[in-house]
Length: 356
Image 1 (spheres, rainbow, N blue to C red):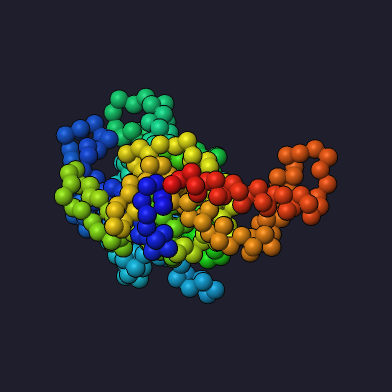
Image 2: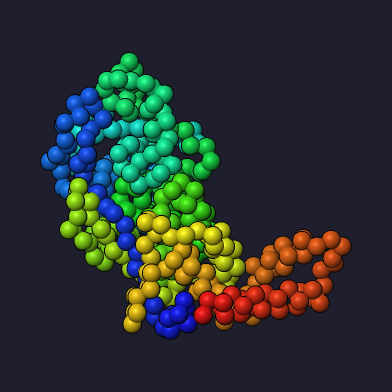
């Protein structure tokens, strides 16, 4: 029983959705506010093609002898194998007034203010702040008339890798490369990225992190082309993409469960806003009221079912010592180890019982 609904959680399908932009249909940032952009480019994949041609993408979605092709999206792989230099140059020229530079760890990442500002509240605020500092009455808000250089956004709180994943999601609707093939490392990456997604006000990225943790295959694409369904009955060049994952998860296991549960506690006070759109599909569909609720529930189940395996793992040793650090003058011994284990089992049972 999960929030009043009885279903076989091992067979549950989870669905999320996000808004995808065909192309720019809003006013440009030039002085001619009546001018609308109508690019002669593929509408559905406009921003995806832009992402593919950004200089920094060559370093995060390349091909290595050890890993093979690391790009998850078949649509992008096909277009990367048949590059169109003329279109790339035309798109770069078309978007020149929208160009910004995000500087992180000394690396300059070319991006575009319209799409990243629309998807990410933190970047939108940073762009607005830097634009206001230039205090221009004419010309692009993103470029200086005197220097013709893009607006610079400095990001110091997050790593280069995390920022690149944020940008991939903003442009394409999905992370397209770079997650570790190691399940434990990949799990840690997604947990860190989920916390960042909440901090930077990017709820669709938070949804994606949760869905990857639930998925049987975490290294896959959820873009407008790879997703389950696309609802094109929308306005202003927007469409709604629905993507689904099915249990069992490849990442939620005894070794990772305790870290996932601890991260889920970070979202325990969060309330689902308009951007959180996760639900279960089955005999009765359930809209999940807050982020990471499903991930926590399944992690509790897995931890309880595989508790003996967890008890013998390094993860329990780390958890045990963290618990002991909360008390003074406690010497590790078998008695305390057993007590910590029993208390943890009881806490899991209390959590699961409280959800019914």
